[in-house]
View 1 (tube, helix red, strand yellow):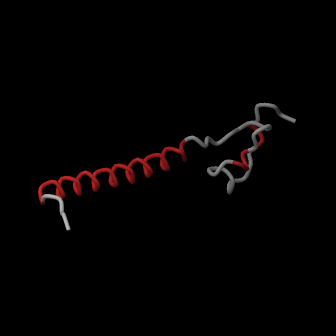
View 2 (tube, one colour):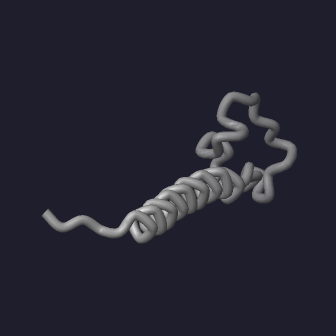
View 3 (tube, one colour):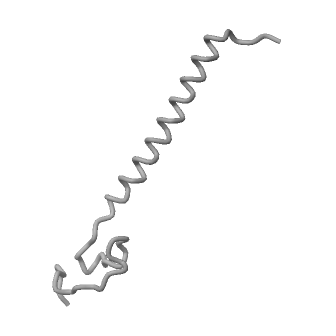
Length: 68
């Protein structure tokens, strides 16, 4: 059974760990940034109830762009 040299195996393991760590960091950063892409809306057409920031707050209709 042929095995890789020790230094080459160590190098591949380091590269693998770096790739896995970079993937996890990028996924966490993208997940955190995606929450910033959901703005609290003040429009009647896009109701604030769909926003994760304002879904539990009472609705203040004085800020509506198109008052009904």
